[in-house]
Length: 509
Ligand code: FAD
Ligand code: DLZ
Ligand code: SF4
Image (cartoon, rainbow, N blue to C red; front, side, top):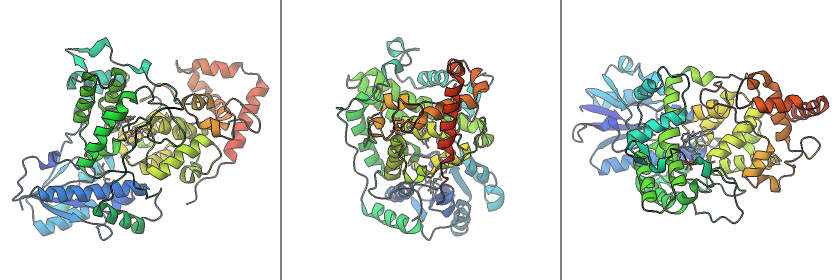
């Protein structure tokens, strides 16, 4: 064997850089289901099944294309990737090992020692599936006072030529968010979400996950996800045809029992390598050019992918490993048990956590403004919040999850990513969803038995961080509103919040 090419579980692209220049006749691909990767987070059962089934299908596909694949399966897998490599090196005796850089710092750090420990040259190549390399992002960030996403996004628009008219944005504007984010209407027609894979490989994997990981988070069946390139492409085409036109307008809306809304539900496929981000954006742009989707929807969608997705990855690599321990607000409370059980009489949280348990999915505003904001308001420990998000979603990998959680949602990086904390009271939830309509609490009341707990928690949060927030341009008005409140109202709000928090129970498994 000339080269042993290690392909990780989220590198399922036939054009992955580790395979460049490879020769089917002489090289061997190694793929391994290993305990270390399956257990470094409390992965949702559906996430485990998605990763393993997609890995097995990809291996099959590569064999059909003429590659030799050495595939290690759980439950009889190996403890970790290094052991899998060591065993494969002994078996195939390669001249060298090639791997594409991993998405997570944890593995990157381990890989630095592989060459020494394995006694074979190890070549780590750049992951070319991203539009902006780690180096390119570092160059962009160098010397900037603030790392504004919007500035970065414009650079990416120019680089890709997406929605550009020469050097200018089409229709003269970079961003159409002013037309987005409308509250939901009851009578919306919502596209169906395609049923998950149920081929024999997937069935075998689901059974294995049930037996091997019975105590992991979430419900395994019905399985919601696609596991091949072809099926992910079909899901993509259905989204582009049926949901993209309304994506922008109702991007932030939430409705009881409607987990998917007009979102693409494509993040797991993008992150695994089943879909290519640039190709997806070009297809969305083509819908606008053909008059099939409005610009506010298409621009908003493209911004999430070439803007936010690339930007958070850049920040992650720029700031790791210290970023993972950020805790600017000194938050230390454990997450309450209902993040695992969905058993709470706060309807918004019961809905979002319940849907998370059932599907391993929640859309951005549900993650940011329901589970995220509540954790922020009660002062939950950002590391614990991060562990939760890293486990429960089908699309969760640290490079994208950590900056969204620690930075955007918990403000633990002191505003590096977002300019202000995403604190909100019940008024926001009531405006953007129908959750409050069927809740036992009243979103308009601040204190009293049926007052929504979010209101007291919100003011308590403002009070707790009064000094810091008063120095923030975007928050100082709210701090002044707090300061103008009569003392007895302030006391009542703070007492209601501390009573609520004292009654929370940590999860005990
Ligand atoms: P759509 O709304 O259809 O958006 C299209 C695509 O844009 C997504 O598929 C995704 O690839 C990209 N995108 C959108 N928003 C973001 C964002 N803020 N950051 C990066 N990419 C974005 N996304 C993950 O992929 N993995 C995670 O582990 C993850 N953790 C998150 C944790 C928190 C606390 C928050 C607030 C957000 C997190 N996100 C994460 C971002 C976002 O919520 C998801 O990408 C999105 O909900 C995926 O659903 P979708 O494919 O239907 O997205
Ligand atoms: C997420 C995941 C899981 C659950 N299992 C495996 C595995 O058994 N083998 C593997 O190669 N990759 C797996 N992955 C994906 C890796 O965790 C991912 O490559 C790293 O976190 C880097 O992003
Ligand atoms: Fe959530 Fe409060 Fe609305 Fe109930 S009233 S759904 S707890 S915001």
